[in-house]
Length: 132
Image 1: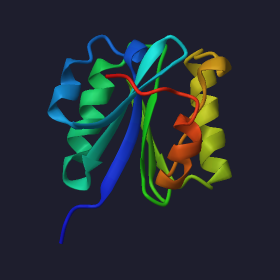
Image 2 (image 1 turned 60 degrees about the vertical axis):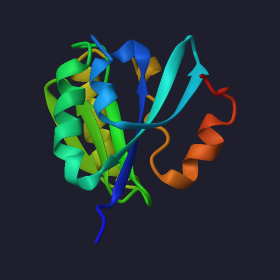
Image 3 (image 1 turned 135 degrees about the vertical axis):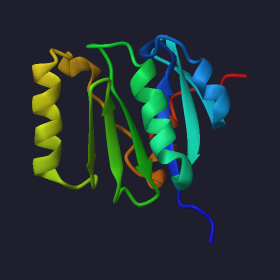
């Protein structure tokens, strides 16, 4: 049986280096907000590796990233020093993530954990043109 698939939307400005992305399947690149969105597919068997790569490359105390599965039952929110895993509809879990962001003094203007499931991707990327 094949691994379940996860997606992530990684922004070019969040990372010390984006070189680690070469290890993964970039399914699309989109422009938006003055940066490039890398839409990356990650098989479940490489999830731990991807989380570690993201953690170690995020710019400290400024950014986060998140990975999600098809139906949003597993969303992994990644900070340089902490990882949360929760379903997309877990209100209490998201409150804990928000509290942690406040502790880290990450501005709320940078908080947009979207999309959180594959069915949200089309609407989220609709205003972000493809990049070659």
